[in-house]
Amino acid sequence: MGGNHSHKPQCLTRMRKVRGPGCDFPPRAAPLGQGPGIPPSTTLGRALRGTACCPARGPRHGHFAQRRQCVPDPVPGVALLLRQLLVNFDHFQILRAIGKGSFGKVCIVQKRDTKKMYAMKYMNKQKCIERDEVRNVFRELQIMQGLEHPFLVNLWYSFQDEEDMFMVVDLLLGGDLRYHLQQNVHFTEGTVKLYICELALALEYLQRYHIIHRDIKPDNILLDEHGHVHITDFNIATVVKGAERASSMAGTKPYMAPEVFQVYMDGGPGYSYPVDWWSLGVTAYELLRGWRPYEIHSATPMDEILNMFKVERVHYSSTWCKGMVALLRKLLTKDPESRLSSLRDIQSVPYLADMNWDAVFEKALMPGFVPNKGRLNCDPTFELEEMILESKPLHKKKKRLAKNRSRDSTKDSCPLNGHLQQCLETVRKEFIIFNREKICWRHIT
Image (cartoon, rainbow, N blue to C red; front, side):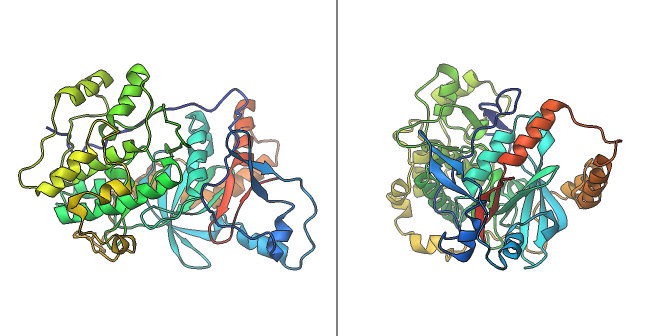
C-alpha cells in the first residue's frame, strides 16, 4: 500500500478568488508577530512619518492604515538613506534558475553590495491576475514578513517592477526532501526523528502566531548545507484566531488530514492546527518507507479517500522501533482531538524523552543525512527552461523593461485592456515592500 514517491502530487486549493471586475483586492493585514522596524524616535523614524504606514486595528482584524501624507522632517542625508533602504531588481546578480514554486519560479541571486547569496522567487503580475492568484501571493507576503525562525525559510526582501513581484528568501542549497526521495536516499530512523523534532518546533512557532500552513509535505521542506530542515511555501497558509476554524479546501491530497476532506463532503465543523501535524506524520512515514501510508493521488475522488480512511489500516514496518511506530500512530490518528498537535504533546512521547530540545533549536544535533555539497541538489532542467523556453527570461529583464518604457513613450505602444490595466495598478498600489535588514513599509504613491 502507498503512493510512489517519484510522483509529485499537485497542490489543491478551493479558496475565495480575487473579487469583482474592478480587481478589489482585500486590504493587507498588518505583519504578524514582532516584525523588524525603525523606532519612531530615531532620525529616520521621524523622517518616515510622512510616507510610512503603521499597523492599525480594524473592527475585525488588523489592517494597514494609511497615514496622512505630510512633509518629512528636513533631516540631512535622509533621502540618501531612503534610497539605500529600497531594494530592487538591480541590486541583485542573477546566477541560475533552481526551481518552480506554486505561483512562480526561483533562482539563485547575489546581492551586489553585501555579496550575500539568496533565493529569489518571482511571479509575473499578469499571470497571477489571470489565474486569480494575487490574493495568495499577498497572503504569503503578509505572513512571511512577520516570521523569523531557524526552521523556516525566512523572507528578507520583497519588491516589484512593471512585470513581476519578487520575494528574496534564505538560500538553502541542500534541496527539498522530494528531490532526495526521488534520488532514492535512505533516511534512517534517527534522522527522521530529528526532522520530526525540528519541524515540531517550527509548527509550534507558527501556531503561536495563529498560522496553519496547510501544505506540509516533502516538496515544501528544504535542507540546508548541514541537513537541517526548513519549511517553505506559505501561499495557501491561513490565519485563525481564538476558536476560529478554517473551512476552505486547501492542501495536497495525499498529505491532507481526514477533517479537511470532511469539510468538503458534508460541511463538517472545520479544521485547525492538527491538520499540519497529520501532514508531518504522512511525511515522516514516507521518508522512512519510500511511500505514503495511504494510496491517495491528486486524481483520487473525495468519497473514495474518506472511505479509505474508514476501512483501511496503516501498516508499519516490522523493522521500525516500537517508539517510532507509536509516535507515527499518534500523528496519524484520524480524530484531530486525539492526535498529537502541539510541541507539548510531542515532548510527552516516551520515544522523545531523551531529546535535548535546546540543542535541537540551536541546530547542535547533526542529522544523519547531509546533502552533497559538491552538487546543486535540484533538477537541472529548470535552468534550461529559463534560458530556452521562458518567454520573458529574467536575465534579459533590464533590456526588456528599458525597451518597453521607450515604446510606451511613443504612439506605437499598445495599451492593455482597461480591466487588466486596472488590476495591475491595484497590485502595484497594494504590494508591500519589505526589507528585513531595515524597515517594512507600505508602498504609497
